[in-house]
Image (spheres, rainbow, N blue to C red):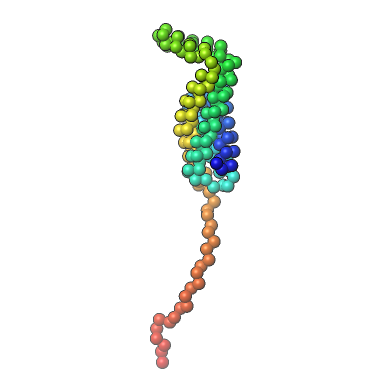
Length: 175
């Protein structure tokens, strides 16, 4: 993997993961996965910043990698937050579920899943974010690459003109 891809996607994924995990700030993802698209676009922009050239494929790949890093960061942060804040999350979640008239059997299953190991929450977050981030971060990288492609400097090829053949007169000489 290219060093430019690694650094740009790592930074884009870190921003994506942080913004998607911080409580209340993560609500930005309600708007068409805003933070995920932004993380992919940031990765493409940082990739473009190195050489001032980017193709659609490079932007998409930088965004995709940012999405994968973001899924990992988000899963780790959500697992840590769930470990320390599970009581707060659980009470809010159960209040929401009670308002929805969910059957008691379903509530018992939900309770068993979420009362268990926080690693389960991390695994669920990781799997779902890998799928969602792969789509929307790639889209963000594509959008950014399309915008930045217009700023690509023109490619100048220095080609020497071949020597011209000698010109012969087309009319016969006059006497």
